[in-house]
Image 1 (tube, rainbow, N blue to C red):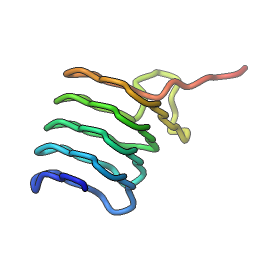
Image 2 (cartoon, rainbow, N blue to C red; image 1 turned 180 degrees about the horizontal axis):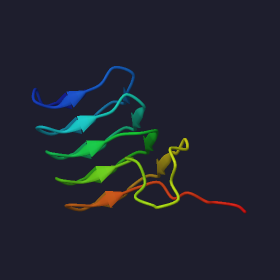
Image 3 (cartoon, rainbow, N blue to C red; image 1 turned 30 degrees about the horizontal axis):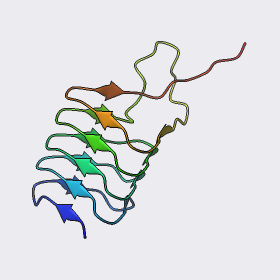
Image 4 (cartoon, rainbow, N blue to C red; image 1 turned 180 degrees about the vertical axis):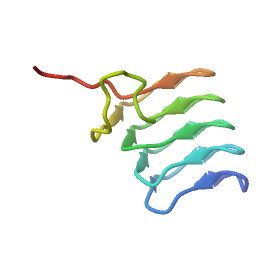
Length: 102
């Protein structure tokens, strides 16, 4: 069973597994995959090509999967992969790490 707060914004195309809770005013982008038993608190933004494993908890005001804040980032396709059993506390910003070769 999924528990999606009525004020959350869940874009078409995202995949939300069983027993996932998404809190008030959270935004889930179209290319996001959320695994079983995850709890997303209020005011969380998950965007980009982001995959979240099982049993994760993401606290309020976290931003995951948005464009990297790196001077060499020029719009390349990026991906954020989060494993299982993690906790992201308040105001956590997780961007994609880009490896550049010369």
